Image (cartoon, rainbow, N blue to C red; front, side, top):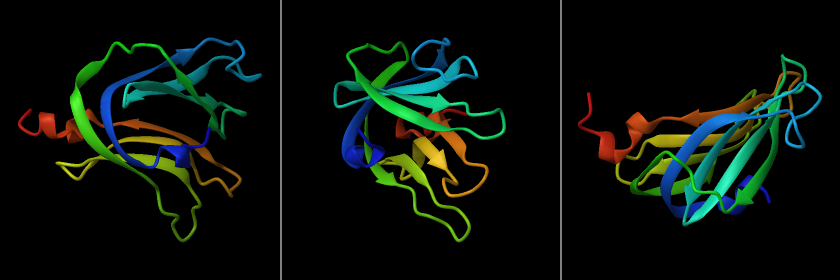
Length: 135
């Protein structure tokens, strides 16, 4: 599976962040950071490849049947691939809340063609429409 396979309109209902212990998900650098989310009833894990402590990237995306802990009322989101910039090529999927228009979740690898790529796992719940009045 690739990130671009998730482009389109979805219902986002859960997001969790965590660490996967040094097993088949992690590389030689030990534990791997991951972010998981549920869209349209399917849960996806986006797992980091820690590389060498300076560089990192998305190792893989995994679809599971796991039920996440951090659930919330369904938010309609539009998933799009992040545009490249002048000096940065991206493989990042951004989820924007349709009502607020703001990005709430981003996953993937930024700066993929550079010496220092980086893993992207950003969760911005404050940008959800349901949180618009929360101070």
